[in-house]
Image (cartoon, rainbow, N blue to C red; front, side, top):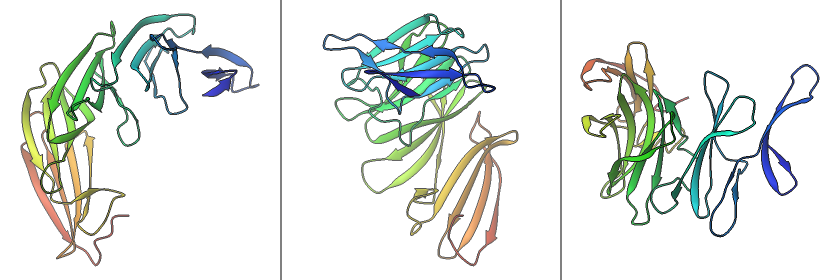
Length: 238
C-alpha cells in the first residue's frame, strides 16, 4: 500500500519491470468526510483475483469487494464504529473462509462482537455478542467457527469456542491452562492453537512442573483425541 496524494491506494506492480498493473483506491463516504485506506487496512484476496478491503476507523467501518481488474467495486457495505467494527487490527486480523469474512471488535457498551460479512453480497450480521469476553476469530472448518475467547471479568483466562458459523450458537468450549498466547508473559505458561488436517491442535508450555502438553480436538464437537505430556527443562516457549 502506497501513498498517492491525500489518499492511500494499493498498487499492483509487474514483478518483471515494476510497472503499474492495477491501482485500487477504495473510499467510504460518510456524513463528515470520505474514509480511505490506512497503512494497516487488511486486504484479502479471492481465488478469482478480486480483492476485499476492510477499512474505516473514525465514523464507519467499511468493507468492499473489488473486481480483479481494479475497475469497480462489486459491492460496498459499512457499519457504525460503535456497533463492533474493529478500531485496530493488531492481534485480531480478519478471517476469510467458507463464503464469509469474520471480524472481531468491541461495541460502544464494551461488548465484544464477531461480525460475519457475506462475500457474495456484503451483507453484515452480528454472529455473536459477549459481555465478559474479548473474541477473536481463528479458523473455520465445515461450518464451525473457532474463536479465541479472552475472559475480561474476574481472573484472566483464555478459552477456545466452536460456534456454528451461520447461527453463532456455541457448540463446544475448551479452557486453556496457560495464561498467555505465545509471545506474552511466560510466568503462567504460553499456548498456541492451529487447525491441522487431524483437527485443532493445541500446544501449551506450563510451569511447576515445566512441561509441554499437546492435545488435538475435533473441530465439530470439541472432543479430545487424547493428550500427550512431555517434561521440559524450561517453560520458555520458543
